[in-house]
Image (cartoon, rainbow, N blue to C red; front, side, top):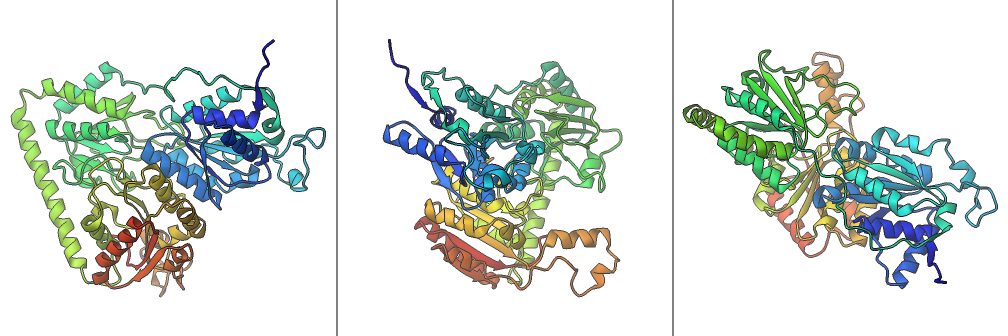
Length: 567
């Protein structure tokens, strides 16, 4: 009789991760990890494939690195943390992952299930203290799926299900808890010859009859408008939107996510009240918040078309943007199909389309010239404007560089030419930028990675832990801290809501100051990095060039830029 090969469930778990395409695990370990550590060493000694573990001294850094890796690689990522307390330290980052639709598997140990009777039973006081009635409740609001691995269950199938759900559109995080006893149990080694099926599911194609209705509306419009959120997540969709905008002469407005090149004549920057009112047909592509209803509204007679994987954004408790036509499906595919459908419909309207193209191109040129004038007016002025930092990066960074922004540079002043050249967050969970930059560097070591962070955002990012990871794993990035010594977003909020209030009459708005400001450049220096303080605008470009050269030489770098307010 043939002997059945057995391995630990922990070994099966690591094998399943690798089989599902996970090549890195971003980890902050604890007393629940011994089975994982033992399994990793055994597998390495046996010559088996196992993901590489990237140790991060804080869970926020680990999960943010996972997100940055996924955003650049387009693949699912995995982070592992210590029971309930480690999970709690990821909550802010998990909120970001949910709203940014990032496919992350967050795995966490669970305090041992048993008090005695098993080799993995509780053997420390903390094993009683760290048990929740419902550990997954900590992140349940932010995940698409959560589960606890149980005795004698097929770990390979469960891991594959987790990754498939994370990758299914709209993508998002999932959560798996791993009891220590279960990880230590034996299991029959699963066959490695599993079918090589694609991860996730094929994206839904928008209904053709609905797209034909949309094409009819657009073709008959005098001034159609595209409002793009996170619509272009691949090079193909980025090119498709540029082609549609050119062929049909449709202006495109975007938020922070790059959907169309900065120099495209149909790119009109962020949506404005004037554009919104002028549009008679509005196509909203994968945008949860296409405009701010408190400040602007579309023309009452405008036809509004929403296209997204989940055009109702059903995970948002309150969202009530009007819609004349709501289409579920992949927005990139929708753009390609609309381009073809409009070709025939606009063939006899070339004069109208050409005139509109000229009008939009002229507006685009006016915006470009206004931007140049703003930059010119800021040159030589201290404190250094974030817009000047963006302009400096335009001059010295590689075209392939990745910029990660978190309330740092004036991103509308950044030149963008590709879908994955700029990363930001959308849900206000500060502290994501530095970790995501390091994860992006891991995803593509050949590209420059630059993070531009407000000083408040930088402190939220657990910078000592992040810079440690850069050094330990040879992932040098450039961190630019835009240091205005305050929480500028809070100050702006007070000014906006109470412009004539008592708070704005004070010498300093209460509860926003971050003075005295730390010497941020020294944090990087403590981890072997290059650091410099920049106060004179004339020193900005040379400082960035020197920092990028340090990166090229394998050294992380931080610039503490004494800055003014964002405009």
